[in-house]
Length: 171
Image (tube, rainbow, N blue to C red):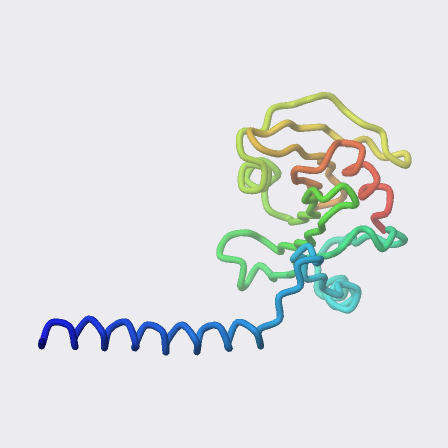
């Protein structure tokens, strides 16, 4: 008799917990139509970083609304842990791929190795009168150029065409 009560009690307890979980599930938002991208506003952060950076900091202007910023940061050299003055701006592109602007006054090779794993030269591209070196990494690609004492790298899983579109919007 004692064994049946224990199993019965366990089943009743599991049913009670199941009802609580089901009620909780009903009240949680679950929008299946969204893509999970949480867009961020970057223009204020870019304006602040432009004032702080010791080089001409570049951020895009005039990109369509289909380019959604997902991450933005500026770290001065004093906080950068050996990364120099570092500007980062990440996007989800119109095709759903990732593209980022990485800009730093760190040594060019050190910057490239930190943002494009296994980078190998893959030709050049001329975008809006600026020569960009194309690089193909193990999982991503990049366009890079040097201006003044800073290196700019546009990197991600986006195509070279989308990276060139991002390069053209940089001001």
